[in-house]
Image (cartoon, rainbow, N blue to C red; front, side, top):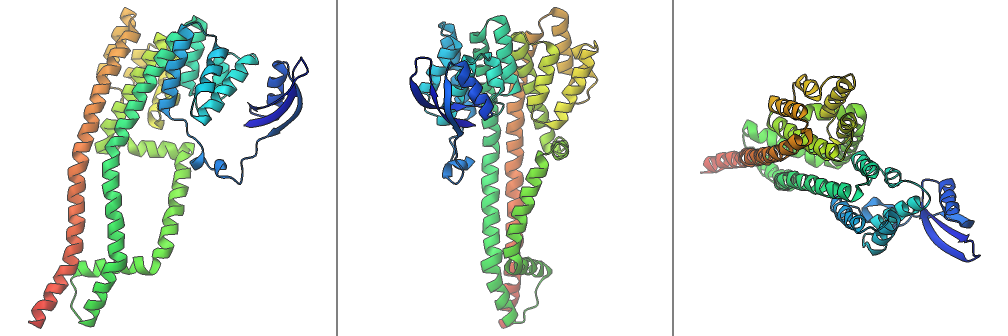
Length: 402
């Protein structure tokens, strides 16, 4: 939250500004630690304006965080302090939302928080993975290298998201357009055809009767159907965000024949990439597994990693714990075992991440290759049924007239 305040510094000069904090008490504490005596403070009110809706708020994208991470790494490498670096980046950033967050981080650092602690207070922007990487960088004294690791990792993750999004955009657009056209046909065109058939007492084929019945439902109950679909979709979305809903949705997604291989490749890519990045930065293996479980974005594989983590904590080798999970391929288990025996686990995981990235690219291309012909066949069948339902009775009418 943002708080507007008036305060007097130790020289007696009055100033007005904005501070970001979780509560009024925390805001006052931050200002007092900066040597300011608070005269007045209040939370900024944004309700009732366009700014209160997330649709109109400036958004922070992964790309923004990637660029910020590279910039902060460069500043650390040049010997600039964390406080000065964040102040500088906040002042020069064009994204207002990110500017506010970076200013908040700088305020927290000035109030005595470690950098990782200041980032941890902003979980929507900095994931547990990001925070723990920074914490490891603080402990090792290599923050510049840590932020470069993070920028590279986020860049790869962003590329992965974009590739998946691109793969789904074309089929979604085509199917969405087709659905809109079909609804328009059922609402505006088919009823006119039905009236013509009724006027001529034509004997209708079964397929035409089914199409007319569907059209009748759209015409009579369409005004109720759309709100029901929207409300049902909203409830499904909310349910899918609960723990039980997310578990069931991810369980189903992981069993769909065409997509099963794709989700496995996504998981393996993130597992190898995350583990390599964290182990290379000095994060302990158990913590690395736990953090990867938190950011893997699939309940099935998150539970898998939690089981692996529990076994590793009791003394089981990482490779053996992975071997006991049927969803983990044997090649990954064997490579991890070699990495443990040679002490080069980070290097092995880096190579695995590259390998599974290529495998994921191939899996995405395969899914696209299957979706497009299946979509064309499906749409062709649907259009064929609709055309046949109209042409067959019209042909019967023309033959009876002649």
